[in-house]
Image (cartoon, helix red, strand yellow):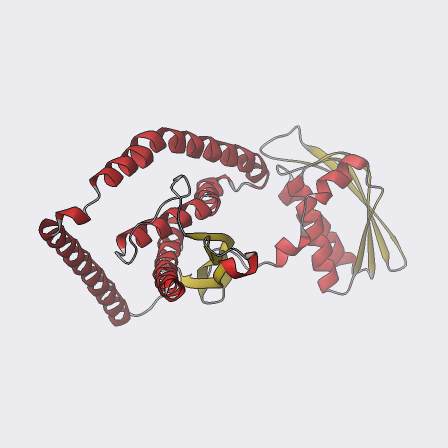
Length: 343
């Protein structure tokens, strides 16, 4: 049987069936791709329903072209048959066809979709939730303004506490010197991710998900750098330490803080998406001679935050909130450990 795709008449394929006892042999010939995906999958499924076999054998010896979308459809047919307790075998695959099937992960077909089901609350619950969100934003804003005014007043009465040289240095290093290279790197990384993902998503008609993929990937790739800079900023702003230097500073210091990111990803749960971050922090005292006694403490921190907005922006907000809580806890633990060690 030859079927023509309505959108592209040049895409042609042929499927023949041969049934021996309870075994159904399906011979595929021609080109199988995204354009005729719906046609040949419906035809194969219809034949399986009508024949009702115990075993299915799909012969690929006559195939001249197949793409990943068609391969994924064949795997889905194989899984559907397995669900009906029908054995399905793929035979006579050439090297090119095997290469196409090798990039298809069958486990992805059973994965929970990223777009979780939305549950609509009634009008009163929505008003209550919105009121709580507004109240939380007001509290955070008032707290920020209060801390800012308090810091300004303290600086006016204690002008020596304002490290003008350090401020100008970091403004120059992080702003003027850092912006061009960070912008260029971000642009190149985004272009590469978008280009590579577009080639694959185009085969299954999922091009609209490329911007979201780039957003999630950029947050994940830049996560360790953002985490380190956030922790440095919070420790400097805490006022608990005489001085806190970055990894680029050549000043000799007694205490050295090292760490690494263990987890920085998005987890899918039944109740929604969760931003997960975990890190391991080690505090060392350089004045101690023995290597085993240099470690003041070593601790693993982890935090999970539920996304209120199921989007890349919501992922960023949840990860920022988790990082903020971890930063406060790490700052306190480091301060207590240094105070105890110094005494």
